[in-house]
Image 1 (cartoon, one colour):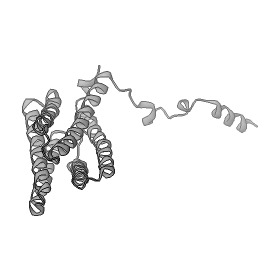
Image 2 (cartoon, helix red, strand yellow):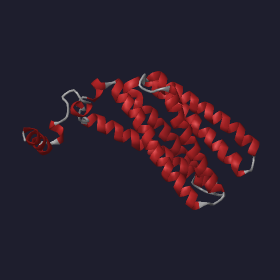
Image 3 (cartoon, one colour):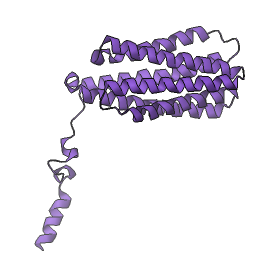
Image 4 (cartoon, helix red, strand yellow):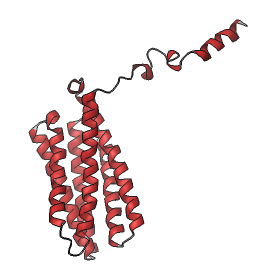
Length: 212
């Protein structure tokens, strides 16, 4: 009878009262306003990266598109914005380096679009190798700056991003609009995950900068 009474009391207790004092659930801190602000802004920058890349694919693969130059300028500015976003934590030189690597990523992607449009398969393959080497450089830079980011993990995230951009371009060139919508949706979902991995690592590395 006593045992049944104890079980009954436990069932009526809130779940958090049954959590061990030293457990992760009991000790998980709330997000600070500065952390939420940084992570949301970082997400938006990378979402813009995907969307403006997709817009550029549309402009570049459409004969006579008048906005191609302007869209490319906006896309390149996005790379500057991403580089600027890490300067408060890693300094001016590091931010400029990330911008440089990301602009290279965009320039190579633009060359791939042009080569694919004109059916230059060999050149596309050559540029793809260069594109993936650039992704390796970005992964090495980010993991080298932050011990919470493993090089292979970041590389896998970047490779997936390249695959999804390629899917977007391929679908656009063959006018498979349904497939293109899927690739863009998947591209946005993936880039949000990638942005969160990086921003979480930054917060973990610089906790004093996210107290308020």
